Amino acid sequence: MITRVLAAIAIAFLVAGCASKPEPKPVLADSVILLPHADGTTGAISVKQGSREVILDSPYASAKSGADGTPRTGRESEAAVKQEFGALLAALPPAPVSFLIYFQSGSNEFSEASNANVVLLLEEMARRPFPEITVIGHTDRVGTDQVNDALSLQRAQRVKDLLTQRGIAAERISVGGRGEREPLVPTADEVSEPRNRRVEVSVR
Image 1 (cartoon, rainbow, N blue to C red):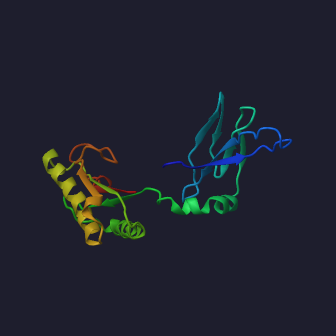
Image 2: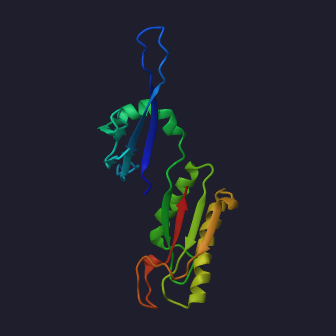
């Protein structure tokens, strides 16, 4: 998952002691705020200032550059971040998401267990007016390499056809087939493994 980071630059102006003195230049204070993913989890980010380094690894953890060369750590509230950066966050594109769609053995027909994932995929498409979609087909190890290469591409094409029927422009969808070369579950040859008969859909 991609770590979400909000970087803000605040400008603090030094006030001159008297009007006759030259006006000082503004001092820049760089801030970094680590935002959580939709499920509440976060990754981690290293923030360095000079030779000093701090790690942010929890939701809304923050670091601000210090005048002495040491990053100052803290924590922002969710409400404060939304209040200050709400317009910026609303303008960001949705985070990338991925879906797995499984298939019946030797076929490009969806398995019954994948119907719910198909619905979720279509709902996600409805929220994205201009998505960029990658569709990669896979097979289990039943059959020859040549047959499985063709089948994996057919599965990817089946998903692409479904999306274009729902109004997604074909040029926004790239497809490919990996055959049996990239299994989720490694098996011996000619083993039927439902989790390997899949299409991986990446949406951004």
